[in-house]
Length: 267
Picture 1 (tube, one colour):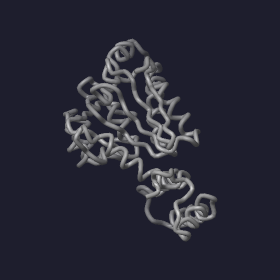
Picture 2 (spheres, helix red, strand yellow):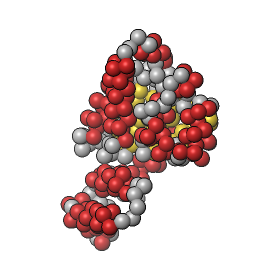
Picture 3 (tube, one colour):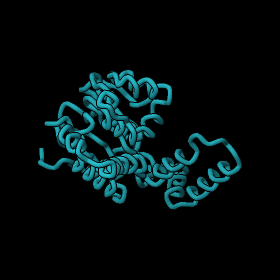
């Protein structure tokens, strides 16, 4: 294990694993971790070699939220200082949410406060049985402000009314029912379940996956009006005419594997 607060490993098949490395404080946030996670995620969005991004953590916990020493420093901040601090965390969440690459959270342990926000920002999440979640901010006299758009989107307003206000802990199985995580598995099956999702993602066209993420943002929550109909038609027209779209259709008609699929993923 290195002394970096964030470790990055990119495999030959294009799987970028971003690992939070503060296990001694349960991967709690401070300004350094936030800045480094933001920097690494931005670099991956610009890296064509990275096709899937996995957000993981060393130690027993995924992330316990805000670091206690960071919070002590906050107590002496002015409102302006706190605003600048909050905007940095907000930018991290937005960076992960808007990444053009598919993102998966690997949740091996507790996710509290901002840790829940990280999970909600990822496209999907695999959690180990025994992992617990909590939106614990109100017990500190705070609110889950900058993570709220992503968490409310993931679990819905009604569930947010409960868990934002009670700050109670809930198990991985409940996180699954709420829509916060995609799968819950025994700890020993965590990586194999993650690999199964990655295998599926690597079969999709890299540009098409990014365009599909943009498409979801464009249509979610909007009435099906003329502007939406025309926009979706323009999107598929552009995709069909793209080099990747032409390759995908040709591969299908010729009964071969598309060029973007790694050899081991062709079956």
